[in-house]
Image (cartoon, rainbow, N blue to C red; front, side):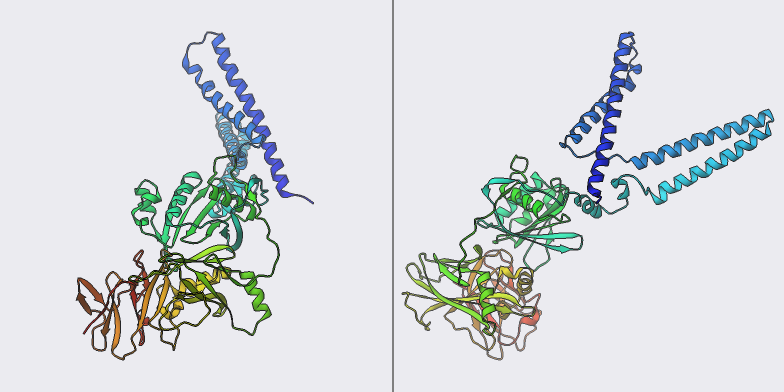
Length: 584
């Protein structure tokens, strides 16, 4: 069978050999002409100009084509069809000029036979000139090289066309284990989306900015694009500010406050294609958008990006595959070293064996060693969440135990895997039920990473919504006063604790301060909700103010965006250590 790719490569090689021969001949002629004039004692500099111009151009062509034939440089793409069209038009013009001259010569000599021949000859070539110019301008060339065939295609399609030549990338391996745990590809029209799970410690906001600056310096060319935003909220373009502040994310004022995601985009000389790289704060996930359809090539690119080895002999090489662990039956949930571990494969296997049971539950006990301990949640070996058990007043959890319940199930249609975690702090590890004297914690519902795009979509839909949408308040149940709620900021990804006080009196409602950190119980039955303002202790409360993250100030419950969430029975959220106000 014919191999079109090999035929194209063979034609390209032949063209470059011809170009090498021609350029070598021109180099010989130009240098020979210079020495010949020197030998004749020629002193006029004007006599040397043609050879002086031709010699370096020929030399560059010789060097370049030699490197191309050795595989050390990209092929020189010469528009052969374009040159052919222009040459043909010039030839026809010369013939037409000859016919005109012949006509006037015959007219002056009275030789009417020759004059008639000149008219027919000139008319034929005038039509030929018209035909070739029309073909060149209107239709373009239907033969010749690949570049000319794609000259009227959009830049996006040209990149895609170019990438079709490199889909058979073969990886070279480093003497080290890979940083890539998993890579998944999905198609978005002509573009591909690659989701990469990193097999290493995760990254935070400062690392994201530093990483972005490295990629913009090491590989991305052209006019870059820099965007940032919160999960579930449209990203904001900060490119102009980025360019005005030295082309550094670290120096861009808008990026000083932590965001949920950061992305940079540009043209990659390494991939010969445009690429957009997205980082997600406090996760182990990278996302790439590019027309390149090659898992191995993208894996090499990501490995190089993580190791920061562009421009070195380790660039575009993969680490060795991660060692396989012994096959053993695992529990969907395990507790080890004060942290929670979820195995998605084990959970799916359990669900397959127990389709009638709505959820899997595992209870355990975690020993605490700090005043405000942090419990990590790992999914398939990757840390995806950090829950800080914040204290209030003189509380100290050092030497105590956290009795925790982890429930795994599915939510919505189509179903997305989700985890619900809660527990209480105890003085002993003795298995018992929670009492009213214990301090409890209920974590925000967490969509598991194994749910992939569906889980991310469901999580994004909860951004800015009230407590029931986040799994922090159960419909029909009152949250006990000794249970603290643990939210995850959709912008910075950090956890924080707060009280969720219920106001079930018909006239009672809740309002927040302008900074979103203080809560006030109000009576809202006879107020102008749009213009209502209450001031106390230097704080200003408004009816539709949002409840905000204490770390970055981003809205956690956004009543301005979702005013319909303010319904009867809404909870008043009070950050730990803050005063709860009340309008008398």
